[in-house]
Image 1 (cartoon, helix red, strand yellow):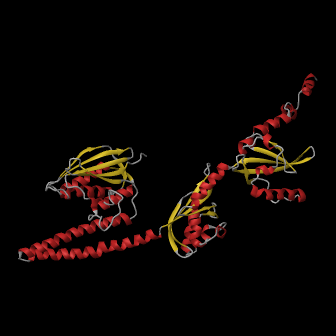
Image 2: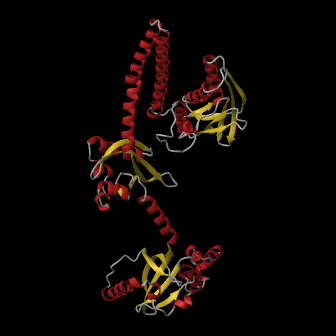
Image 3: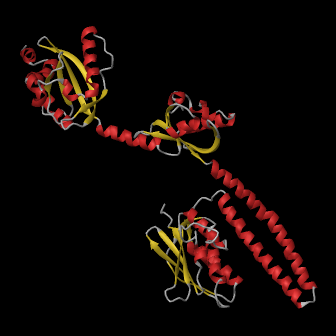
Length: 489
């Protein structure tokens, strides 16, 4: 019985939970809560008079609560919007009908110093001591609006066609570049699957490619392809891609579609392929015929002068055949699909190139004076680069037994340099135009050789560059092949 009495004296579970709240002065608790929140609170009556403001209002709009209480809400509303606000409240008090949703209204509010502050306001109606009141919760969204303006500036001021899609491919937003190309309005495309829009109606394959891109991207796999799309007054070949955008949990929230207009680039590529075919077949075949007849004449004619003429024709045609071979390599480097880059020890490639050139030019002296640990990000074309640069140093030497010194050095933390010193007269300024500098090639300023152009093109594709400097003592010059260092795995 005693235990039962003691049990009866203990509070129930619900009483235990309620007891801490009973010890709090609720009015004081909520007063502190309102005073310490970072969001502004503002209450007006039916006459639009401000009857309450918390301290956070001063942080957002600059006014102290004491300054605002007793003034009209119009103090905080831009003049151009005051009549609309007054009419809206009057209509609600009269009819009870809301003309806008009171949850999350974006409004400009007037700061004490006169500038406007974008705020997000949520409004609630309540009564206090029989008085009808309206309290708004204010949140400063200046940072968010600034980010939005920056996003819109980038989004709409790019030359690329750009769109934001739902994961199922439904269009949410498209930039002005894409709309202008199709002479479309945003309402023409928003809400449609991207493959059903006007741009992709040129042929079935175009629609299927866009659909495939969405399907791949919604599975988390970036998609990229080339396709021709329809514009208002022309078609365009675009480098088309769709990429998934995920949240911090890895869930796909959006797809970003992009299209870069490569029509002019593809046209130039087509022209280059025609020239490539001309060099590779027609011109080379004709030069071989000329060279063959010249060699026949040289061995057949008895007149020494005529034999010299034939020899000159044969030598010149042979040189032109070599030039067409370099031009073919130049076109191949431009047109062929690039190999995947890998870490290559430049010293291994250099050793093979030097050995081959020593065999071709036995009278030359080719030495490698120093070499650092040098793994670079390149592919099989690195052999061509080093061969062209070293070959250029050999054949343009002024003496019959040219000397070439090579060193592999560190240019900086991200770059390896292969330095090729020669004893020749140096590379004329006209030959350096566009290869060792950004000067424009003209009819007056241009080079005749293609070997350094080929080396420059490949190195540029690697993300490197060629550098040139004459020797300080005037005894030759130095060409440096600067290559990006291979990243550690």
